[in-house]
Image (cartoon, rainbow, N blue to C red; front, side, top):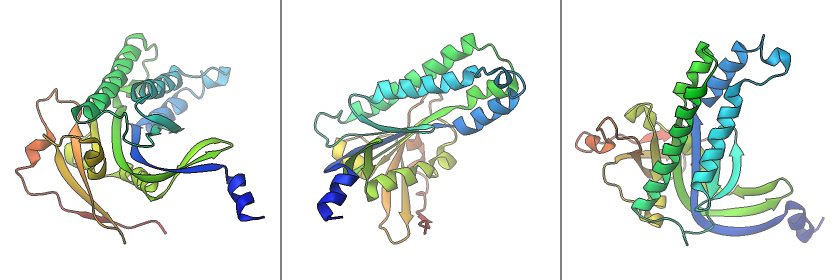
Length: 243
């Protein structure tokens, strides 16, 4: 097969440089696993699906509705929505970026509140809906867009990195609460303000350190990550790369 035939077989390709967004529903896997176990003898036995599954689908739909059309949906990855923009043109800028994420989080919590008002199951597993949370990771950089038979695929080191950063340690610092982890590259591209944020640094083997900020999306408790700025800086963590 010639190089041209290989390219056509792989689908059309194009390079881009823009923001990459992951919106992840934390706690979803444990929640649905618990619901599945709790209803194995009743709902599933009759071929019915517990309401929890429809709720999670509704939450994912709500996330997509909130982040598009500013971002383009790349794909749904289980409990996360992966979206991108081919460039910064036409994107929200400055505080509007945080407003976009905060609005998505507010919609997410609104759907959870609505579900609680009509929730019919009182089992402990289904009550675990209160453990669901939403986390954002916003990165930026060059990547390749491939049109495959299965749909649009994004590839490149920055795409890999944004998924690695979803496993960050921010939750160890700010606790289990809604937050956005914004890379310095994304903040520079979209002019995201860093007031009231907590600086973090991650370093992967054989790669330069990656600077980022944690921004809380729920300030109801009157607390902000900026409270940590006067304290000792959070040390850089070195993470081993997968072989």
